[in-house]
Figure 1 (cartoon, rainbow over the protein chains, first blue to last red):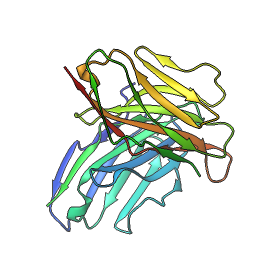
Figure 2: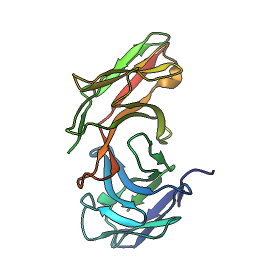
Figure 3: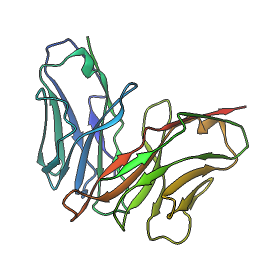
Figure 4: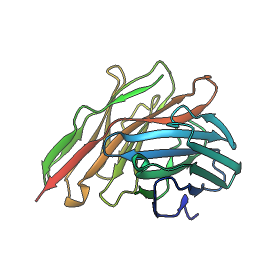
Length: 114
Length: 119
């Protein structure tokens, strides 16, 4: 398996633009997670899905952020409109159900909002 | 709710020496999993080792071992024979039951410890 795939790997955009981050989880995994990592705030869980259904979106910072999982092999995280404080590395991760199962992380998308 | 505490923002170790990275956790779950991840400067998150709450033996994976003390709710990572390539951020994480108590959902991460290995 190719692992968790994220695109793009780097994104530079201007304030006010819409940004869409994409993730393809590992085939067969039940869970998909979106994280944001910054120096100031560390690693934050934004939202996670179980069987394509959003379970906990309490980490989504505000209404400008939205996430979807239309099917088991694809998810998007959208920021509209983007702001400079959204600059961060965004990770997608997937896992199987169960306490024993680790999360497999994608390589991350480094977002810079100018 | 689960909570992970890593009290060491940074640690230094001499090459070839052993180092222990501390992790304590808080949960009311009886069954849970504990994980350590490594994040080198390149940014990827690399899974290192897992310990189950019911596992009687401490987990080991190569030079990594987990000093699991259930009564103290600690799961410290021990790296033996440190190498320069071990310099990275290390995260402790826990997976317990979700809020509804019916499934194991998210991982709860600590704030991380930056390990620097000196030659």
